[in-house]
Structures are given as C-alpha cells and as structure tokens.
Amino acid sequence: MYPQAEIVYLKQDKIKQYLGQLIGEENTLLLEPNNIIEFREQMKQFKIDKVHSNELPSIKRINDYFKDNGIGFSIESVRKTLASGRYRCWEIQRHVS
Image (tube, rainbow, N blue to C red; front, side, top):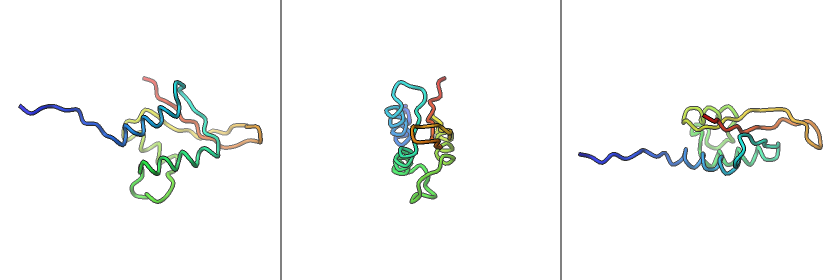
C-alpha cells in the first residue's frame, strides 16, 4: 500500500564521492604530510565527529566512522621516503569486494 523507497544517507554518499574523486581509478592514494591537514579539514567539514566537532579528526576517528557507516575506504599511517627525507604519510585504500 505504501511506496517503498530506498533510504539514502547524503553525508555518507558525499564522503564516498569525495574519496572516489580523490583516488580516481586507483585502489590506493598516498597523502603527503602537507595534504594530510587538508584532508582532515575536509573530514571536519563533513562533521564526521560530532562530539569533537571543533577539532580536526584523527586517523582512528576517521577509520571508525568509515567502518561504522559502511564506507568502503580505510586509512593507514605509513612511513615513506620522499625527496626531502623520511615522513609519516597516510595511505587511503579502497576496499574492493
């Protein structure tokens, strides 16, 4: 009797689109230290952490949000050697199923 409509979560959909555009066709993307802050600012604008909304979210909070909401991405902290030395970078990974 009632129409059945699929529930769409706009915030999760926007985050998936943003990450999809960021990574492109690849399965991983390396964020260098200067790009990590920009990425965290973007996650703050998506308001993924309502309890600490005025802080930049940490890698653990971002990964927890992705896992809890079924977003098919995760972030790992890796050490990479770049042209100017060795740095702690973030690697965004797409989960392929």
